[in-house]
Structures are given as C-alpha cells and as structure tokens.
Image (cartoon, rainbow, N blue to C red; front, side):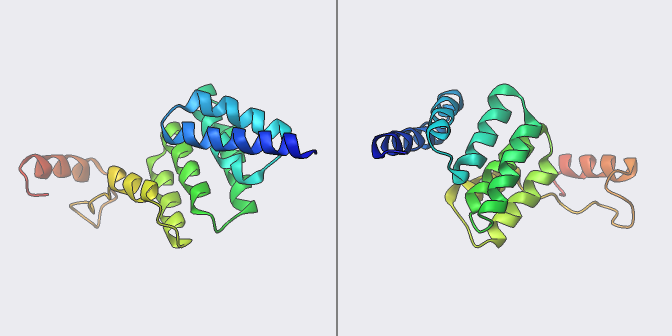
Length: 151
C-alpha cells in the first residue's frame, strides 16, 4: 500500500469517527467502508459493526464484528461500548449492561460509557427477593410501589 492510499484511509477513518460521534451513522458507515477497503484496520471493526447493525439491521454481522474487535484489542473499552450499542439496538438491555460493566472492568471510563450506564440505569432488586424477577407478584408489586413513590 502506498503512502497516499494510507493517508486517504486514515483521513476517511478519522472522518467516520467524527461523523459517528455527531450521530450521523449512515455517513460514518460510508466512510468506514471506504477506509476499510483501502486498509484493513481491526480497531475500526466495532464501529463498523454498530453502523451495520443500526443502518442495515444486520445484528448478527454487527455482533460478529464487535466480538472480533474485542478479540483483537480486549483492553480497549470503546469496542465494548459499540458492542453494547449493538445489543441495545437488538433489544437486549441486559446484555448491553453486562458489556458496559466489562468495559469498566477493562479500566476504561470514557464519558460515553458512563453516560450510557447512567441512561440505562440499574434495576432495583425485586420487592420479594425469594421470588424470581419475572414472577407476576414481583412485577405488579414493583409497579405499585414505584407509583406510590416507595421505590
């Protein structure tokens, strides 16, 4: 690869990350694909995985790309962040929370991860701890207590 195509790939990846930070996922996807065609950069696979899941609805492919990025750089909390976003897009809040906690365990605390953890929040323990969380008694008792402001 010559230096001009390397510089072009670097420029495209920088632009993709900027667009992604601004919430322009479709534009970021285009720049990521262009950048990765010119030069494969495993550290961008988690970003690409999120973009593909969000814009194209390919959740499985997005999860695969994020997991591959984590295998390549397990200490990078940003990969966990994008994996959590894919899980949220797939409707799996519980997996997203586990993944964000893993990101924090890796020693990372970027503002995005902390903000997402605050937005998702932690669940209160069930009112009757000896019953499962899914038990209808726990569910409705929790709703009633929350409405009364006791929870």
